[in-house]
Amino acid sequence: MERLAGLREAQPLARRVCQPDGLRDAEGDVREHHRLRHVPQLRRRKLGAGVEQRPGQPAQHGPAHAGIHALRAVRRHRQSLGAEPDAAGRRPLRLQPARRLRGLPRPPAVNTGLLWRLARARRGADGRRAWGDQGGDPLPQPGTDCQRDLAYGEHPRQRLDLYRPHGTSGGPLPLILYVHGGGWRRGDKALPRLLDHKPAHWSRRGWAFAAMNYRLWPEADVLAQCEDLAQAIAFLQRRAQPLALDPSRLMLVGHSAGAQLAALLVASPARVAAAGVVPWRGTVVVDTAALDMVEVMQRPHYRFYDPVFGPDPAYWAAVSATRVLDGPPATPVLLVHGAARDDARRAAQGFAERARACGGSAAVLPLPLGHGDLNDSLGMPGPCTQAIEAFAADPRGETLRGPGETAF
Image 1: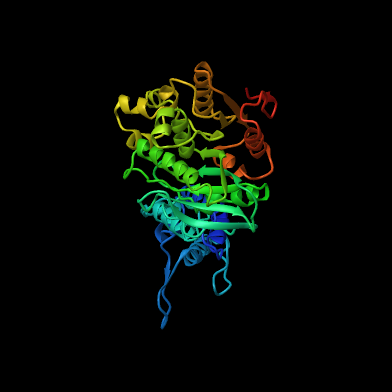
Image 2 (image 1 turned 90 degrees about the vertical axis):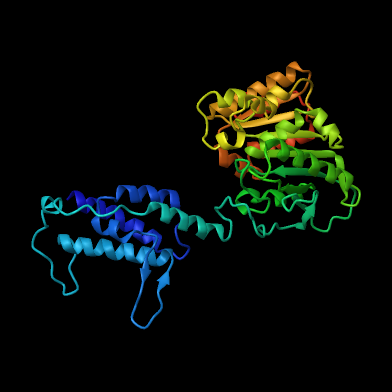
């Protein structure tokens, strides 16, 4: 009976794997495979590497065929237990006792790593769920005109896409420059998972929207990536007139690793001046815990921090926006973080307190959203978009409210 219960769990999994678009949720599928390790046929079939060969036909590969094999394996196992009739319609009178199956040799485990890589490759083809380094063509943004791959530097990654309201012929437009996340190692300005509906939303508000790439680790460390950001802002300010942009109304918005780069730049007025950048209107830092890396690296932290930030405490201090800040930040700063995320809350509050102590303007806004949801909510109706638009209208405003509390 215990094995039949496992088989009942296996059937929905096999049906999902058979869907035309392949594996819809790789994480959930892997978790279910771990629960199905006791089903012998599924272990031997190694889901995700399914190949079907029929007489006179070439071999067929893919997640759909892997799912077909999974379903067939489940049905054969149910037939062996007497829970389902065989091809001749015969059904045994009683189930085979589970104790007779315990003596069978233990087959190899399901190749869940292959299943995961298959799902990543499947989804990476159109970028809907991938975080790869190459984004391909972005999703269409209704009501916008896009100038793609404007070069602000010589490196192939030093490119940005500029979206403008369709048919705009009036005066200079305010601009949002968006810096994507991805752990300093991946991500792309054109990934629909990151870009979503942002350009279309702000174009309807009469704003231009720029999404930038920057060099990635290990080719460029965090300080070099921050220099890329400064170089992109300088490029947009220099080209403001031919691009019909208003450089005095440029808003810098970064999420995750992009938020850390934005905070590091705004905390370094000397770096801003060295790049030939005129201070912009405001900076929005969305959900990052990496503002004081000296503190972060000395307590339990994400594993991917270790290769990116290395073992040198001097380097940790050099990339810590809170510790670099020794005067007012270059612009007012709004720090948005998930209310349930303690590390991001500590980082945001620490930076804001330091900025205010140095005579600058900084606000902290906790919102009841997760890390990815905060990025997804940018440009959607809701408190995150409302807060950014209120901050853009009055970066030094006295009040900015989130759900149930004051952010200043």
